[in-house]
Amino acid sequence: MMNAEHTEDPPSYNAISTPVVSPVTYSPPYSSGREVVKGVPPGLQDLLQINQLSIHERFSVSQRWARSFDVLDHRGQRVYQAIQYVECCGPNFDLRVRDRRGDEVMGVIENNSCGCSREAALTLKGNKCIGFVSFPSNNFITHLSIMDSSREVLLLILGPSLKISIFGNISFEVKSRDEQHVVGMIRSEGNQYTVIFPMDLEVTMKAMIMASCFYLDSIIYDQRRSVTDRPSSS
Image 1 (cartoon, rainbow, N blue to C red):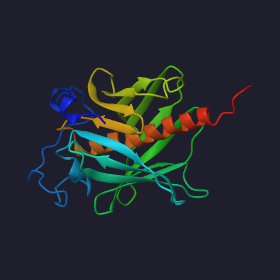
Image 2: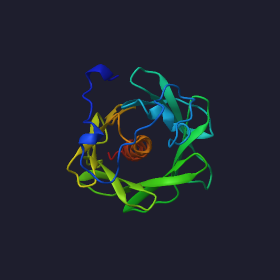
Image 3: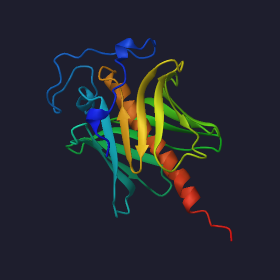
């Protein structure tokens, strides 16, 4: 498990010169996960004073969902729980993020995909779409685009090719859309992910990066299964 005290934080978002997302100053300051903060979607106020999350997969034997996760802050306290649901004739990928009270906060939903590209919608409570994360197939690098609801690219997630780097530890950079500035990091270590972003990053963007991490994990998970389930030649 990664020690948060020794993790190098990304630069303040105020120092990143990109026009696509601006930091928001909230008043009053966050002090309780149950407070309603003006301009912050319900449930996302828990992210206001957070710049690092750890995502741990949990084991479940229920037939109603395939996988579940705990989302922890840098102190190891659970902020969210995420559950991937599997239904007959349902979405290809359907993951719901819930807060400590069990209320749904976000959804990551992929309704269809083709061989050359995959895309999931990012929704808030009430299925309000706030954006998309897309994954075009590329043999050389991993390149995910985080987009707004109009499909304008906001941020990129860049890393090594998943054709060869699907086992062991993997690191991905979250960059501005012009690829000139590193906004954060996503690190995969076994069944755990560490997501790092600036403290002053707009809270909805923090949530979209977290949601995109779940989608990235689903892609890696599918790649690993396709390799391990492949019959060996003898």
